Amino acid sequence: MKILAFLFTILIAHNLQAQKSIFIRVYDLKGHKIARGHVLSATDTSVQLIREPTSILVRDIGSIRTKHSSGNNILIGSAIGASTMAIIGVVSANPDEFLGYTAGEGALGGLIVGVPIGATIGALTIPFKNSKHYLINGDPEKWKAFRSTIPGQRIEQPTSGPN
Image 1 (cartoon, rainbow, N blue to C red):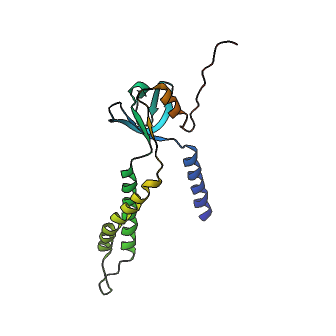
Image 2 (cartoon, rainbow, N blue to C red):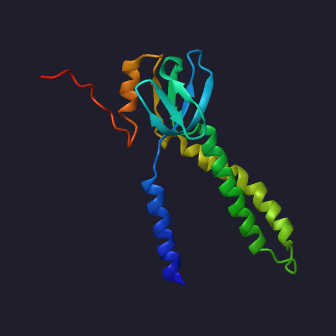
Image 3 (cartoon, rainbow, N blue to C red):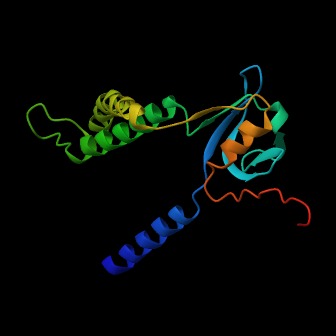
């Protein structure tokens, strides 16, 4: 059974690594967020995201930020901290001891303690996030420079006529 679980874990990790795509947040020329999601394709004139069904034209893009916002780190950290501490509270519950508590009280206490601890740990990871900010402002040259940073995208060089 351990071998089966180990092989399943390797298979999942391999699939996650093989299907890596970049997450971006797209802002218009006024600085308002117009779309977010993983890049499906990026052409010379537009970008298409997995989450959005339509293409976003380069002339409408003011800037692009990679990765999720900082609040996402805090939210994920607090969720992990809350669930971990709640499980510890349930497992360590013993109502028969002096100052003992029930499983429900342990879960509630774990949530109360785990949320701020997890949020703090999530906030501490923000400086290591390494997200990038690209100013496009509808410029095809700046767009081409951004496209070259997208993993898995082929940048086709324009061909000059017959030599």
